[in-house]
Structure formats: structure tokens, C-alpha cells
Length: 144
Image 1 (cartoon, one colour):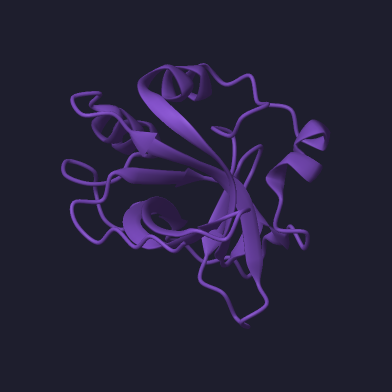
Image 2: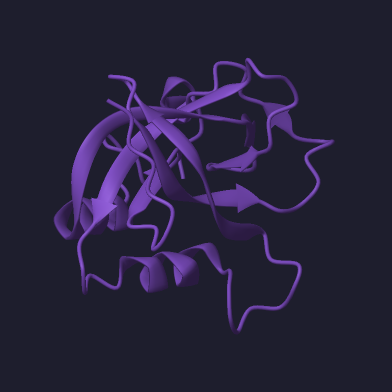
């Protein structure tokens, strides 16, 4: 079965410090205010920015980034909270480090969703790529 939700986007894909298994306070808030649907992947490349990663568009069709998919609960206001955390959207000077935009995400079982993602918006030329596409595989080496 394949599901494709177009609007309004009620799903969120996280790939960094907000994933399950991290100790970030906002990750805990996300888990309380959204329903975890499972591990998922999206097309893209992952770069290490500092103690956190940034997702950019895929260069090849095989570029994949691992993360977690959540269904946002009505009235949770999580997107407003996350926009402030990522310092993007209304009220933040352009160009912001991240931009929230929808993209296709595939759950491990094969179902497809359109989900919100926070895309890295600055140059990555001097940054290290996380070749595995999985931030959790390198996170322990970069404590915050």
C-alpha cells in the first residue's frame, strides 16, 4: 500500500538531533506531541555542520538519508516550535540556515508519505559528508 498525502502536510521527517535515541529536550517534546510512525528514508545527502547535521538535495538517485517519521497531532504547534528552533521562517533574516519544505519519505515497510523536512540552506563545500546518511552512526563522536 502506498500513501501520498499532499496538503496539508501532517507528517514530519527528522534526521538529526531530534531522532529517537537522542537526548535532546526537543526530541522528547516531539515524541510527546506527535505519533511515531517508524524509521524512514528520503533522497538526499547529509553533512556534519557542527554537533548537528544538515540535509541537502541528492546528487544521485542512490543518495539516501535515514531518519524517523512522525504524524503531527492537531493543535500541537510543533512546527512553530521547530521553526523557532531551526531559526527559519517568518521573522528570521534570509538566508536562514534551514528551510522547511515538503519532500517524499519512505517508511521501512515501503509506504510513501509527503512530509515536512528541514533542508540545510547554506553552502556545504567545506563540510564533511556523512556518507552513511545516518546521523546516529556518527553522533556519539560529536557531543553537543
